[in-house]
Length: 335
Ligand code: FAD
Image (cartoon, rainbow, N blue to C red; front, side, top):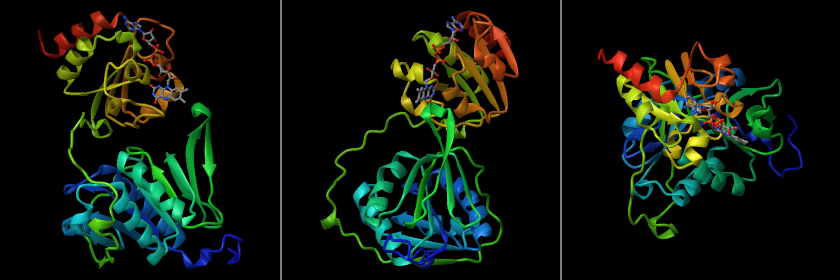
């Protein structure tokens, strides 16, 4: 790869694959371990190191866990200024670490947090940032190939960042398997300089209001509602309880305000891969299928026998959801 590419940076100075380990009050977001697993594959192809980056307060145990799950090195910025999360200290700290350590690739979970601060790193670094990525690989030149749906999900765009570093991407939760502890942890933990002080922060957290905390990406069973429920979630809720499943939804149901956006499945929602996915009153639009087509067994309940969802279901029930759901729930509960 040429040193002089017109961007003012020497891309050969940049190496290693970084994965941001997102934690909140000691709890790591599962997408971080998913990216660590995928980052390992990229690092091996490139012959680079896999580096986990941890920003937070009292994060020693998380750094150890990142080593145990396969990171070659963990860079840690540990300071009270990082708890609770705010975009400005995170963004500035990450940016300073990029400047100091020069990673070639930086992968960040496409969570609220990741989406919030990634731009604050990419813009001052003049780096490319591909958002909402669902597939990653490296090409023969060692460039990151970040793939994401485009044109309403009709095509999968491959985005390359040739001249700038790091090559950054925010990646959808739930699209990769998570890295498990390997039983070996022989990498090193490096304390990075903390460059942010409270006095420099332009934001302050005055109050925290916790909304719907459901994480449907981790659910083993899902009952998802669509526009067909007409605002009445009760039959689907009954079925979900009988199956011990999480409730999720199509965008049409979310847009109507019937259910929280955190539960939306699809191209502009979450990607889920439960063992069981029950689609209730969902037509099966391509944008919805994109978020659930890695599910195990799919059951569709729809009163239109020609609904596209049936082509993607293992079992289909043609009928009125207001009758089928309570009936199924009763049978499951043995009434
Ligand atoms: P509908 O298409 O209206 O289907 C309702 C279904 O319910 C019908 O099949 C009907 O037969 C059935 N039904 C009605 N009454 C009953 C009954 N009594 N019993 C049984 N069945 C019944 N959509 C997503 O879901 N997720 C996304 O992330 C997403 N992102 C998008 C991004 C873009 C850029 C665009 C353009 C669209 C996106 N959409 C997304 C919207 C998507 O195209 C569809 O409009 C949406 O998925 C339709 O939702 P639905 O299936 O619930 O509603």
